[in-house]
Image (cartoon, rainbow, N blue to C red; front, side, top):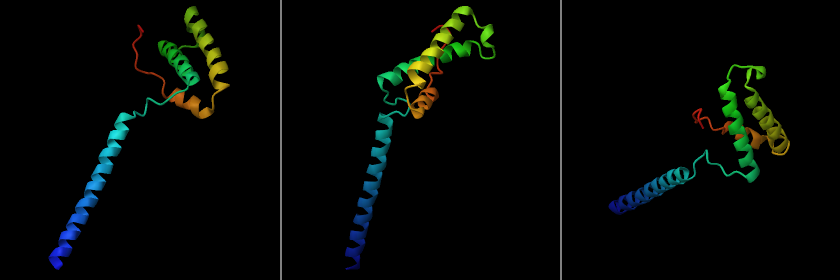
Length: 113
């Protein structure tokens, strides 16, 4: 009788272990298939992400400069992007979307791009 109870307890613990391992493996697979940085963006958010990326690239060319020290073409482009960012993004999207876009600015580029 005691052997029978020990056998059932062992089987029960084995089943619990298998369920836990399966849940953990499933969770890891799910997370690996849905990358955190590749969030689903609306078309407007995608457009705003592109504006933010382009503006960041210009800012990195002049990290310590005043706006008056920029090349005229870069200054015009930056002003255009700034105006577009304010009108098409900041004034329309909720704050959490704006902060998400800012936090996901593409910082991996080279200066020839």
